Picture (cartoon, rainbow, N blue to C red):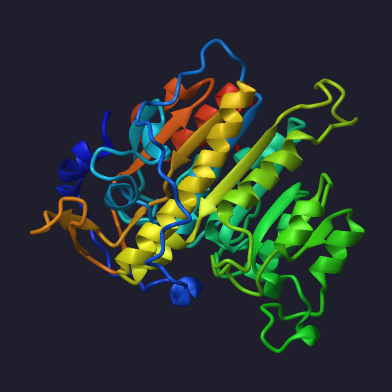
Length: 412
């Protein structure tokens, strides 16, 4: 696949729409979504170089929630111009991903996240388990068992469907207080996002998301986590276990909190410095890391059919992709995979009457669609991700590169 825009028309022909209740309104709704000065497009459009004959040591999976080809193309036109490219458009290996769930042609984020994390199809709404409620190990958990450091970064609550799918196993995505417990119990090294409400006891705030008086922040500290809530605290903290909860609920993606790219850079810094000690004697002191980064609010902007915020959220996500790519190119042993869990909104566009870089957008729905989504890869093993594939194949390919066998498999 060459230029992403060349396949938009073909994919639109297979769109399947569904009337899904929109997610919660994006907390960034009051942010100035018109100002895109934070994003500086690259002056080159050349594809990033392929990495050959290197072993995969680190894996960074970047997921744009709800991000279809229409969202990528509009953001690219707005920020880089007709001939420019976003960072994700410069990935040297590209393809498309089918996204259906076990229960529906049109997936939700829970089922799609489970496919991307555990390599299995499940019903919409389920996290980390098969339709019969059998828990399946996630690629993050398998990496941790191999001795790798692990991390999750999101602009939603860190207990939301996609990050939860990589380190939790619950029947319903609505069980965010249970998910919070599992994230800490799973000893994920880095947890960055929103969602303090699911970590604080009921007695501390009438709006807390917990129904008990467990204080998971205190429990995390007792378990050895450094807890941060501001960008200043984030930048100064140096610890192999970090819990960063920067809002009571989801992030606002405003200037008073660290942007996704900064969270990604810090997560990479922390994880790349983690040294593993016994009980992992078979691995080198630095056994690598697995990191999942989600641009959560692309989806929410699309549920609102808000073109300007869709573009803004996509560009914020692309900055995080750039941070991952920059590290991977320096390191030489890092695989970066960029994809989406599903498309939201059925977003297309037609030629504007005046300017070719200012097209007229059209929405097909306020829910999810059954459109295939983009995938791009860079680094050792990137060639495995070319062409048309199912979302369940992605973690299985990563597992193969990391020599994790068998995968997928039920959790013990």
